[in-house]
Structure formats: structure tokens, C-alpha cells
Length: 150
Image (cartoon, rainbow, N blue to C red; front, top):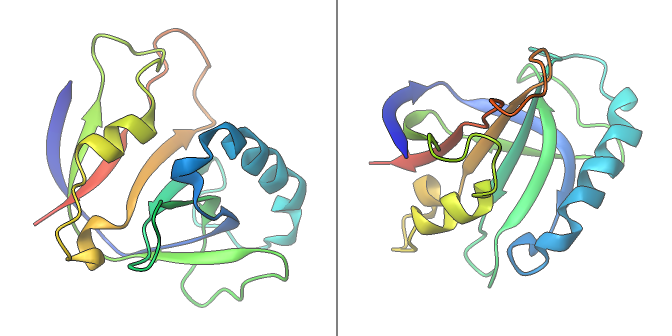
């Protein structure tokens, strides 16, 4: 596992939310399909070729929710049928698997194994994956996972 620490600015991600996704991971591909069907509703993008998977655990939730979406400018309105998450700026550990670049170690497992609940939900609850659609899909395709750190 490769890990580096980076500083990221605030991100506004708009897309399709799957509540309680941590207990229903089998439905995540359907969330992606739903987002792709609704992506045309988003008219302003920061980088349209970058897709995000964002994990968020609301304080009252038993399991984290998952948002599939794209980054938009902060002033962008959220189209009907979509949801926005704001990922606060801060320090993130960036995790990549050197042993399994094709991704059999899922991003969800990485997030859950590196994000214990200690009550600081503003930093722990928003982890995200980045999918760069401009890259060729091959065995070497890796998905960086950003885990918030103090």
C-alpha cells in the first residue's frame, strides 16, 4: 500500500447518492449507472473527465453513504434529482495498492480500514476515490483513495 499526505482544497461534488451504502455495497454499480443517466443535468464542471466516489457517514447513520458524481464550481445549483456533498479542505492520506493495481482491494475496504469513528465527523466522514476517465482502462489502472487525516 502506497500512502502520501496531500493538502486538498474544498470540493463540491454533485451526483447520485446511495444512502447506507456501506451495508449495501452490491448496489454501488447501480448508483454509477444512475449517475451516468443523469449526468446530462449538470451543465458546469470543474474537470468533466474526473469522476468521484465520496463516502460520508452522517453522525446518526449506522453505515456510510456513497455519492457518485463530478466536481462543480461552488456557485453551481444542484439539479433536481441530484445531491451535493462538500468535501472540506484539509490533509488527506492518498492510498494506492501497489500489489493489486487492478483493484481487487476495494476502495470501500480502504476507507473503512483507515477511517475509525472517533466523533470528529468533519474530517473522518468524507473520504473519496478519483476515477480519471481520460486514462486507458488497463491492468495498471489504479484508483487513488483520499482518507482525511488530522
